[in-house]
Length: 224
Image (cartoon, rainbow, N blue to C red; front, side, top):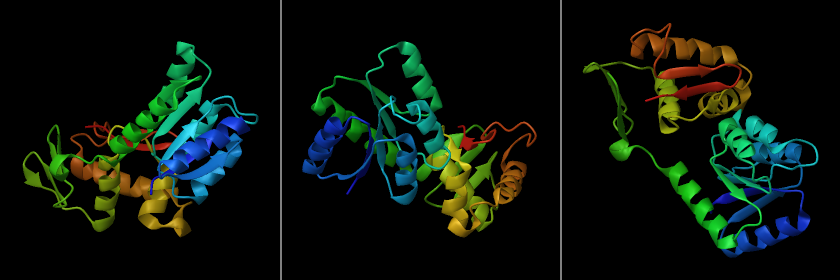
């Protein structure tokens, strides 16, 4: 069952969306403030977030930034702000789609289904080519300029997670949680060490990486 987190301080709209989503088989979580939304996303396995920008405690763009620190799930903004600047800011912060209020329920549901499908998509045959790199996720094989590169299990887990989310920021908290578990979440030095090792093995110039990109203060992304 797909889990949806709906964040809006309009309780009537929140109730209506809960009814529509539940009727279509979704597991629904709700929050009326930005801080409550971040807590809910940390405490539950959420597959997609529907987020209003006009919240009483935080601006929605701040919530997007907070969520992107530990999750890459799709975020669909649902807002009365129709200005192009608001759209650009939300998308630049990490939102995946932007729906303007008032909206049609059928359109929102279609956008939600599309976002979930995109998030579930993995590279065809589990393999991608990125310049001189060839990465086969299914076979757990990576080649550089045709030569197979040996990776440790931890290095592979890190690369696998980044490649499956290629082009998107993966937050440090998410990487630590999924690779080392919740006990080691604060050990950010682990990430720096293993990322440096990966770059030495995979990048043409580890000091100026083309694929394993650091987003300062936030996390990492794989750029094909």
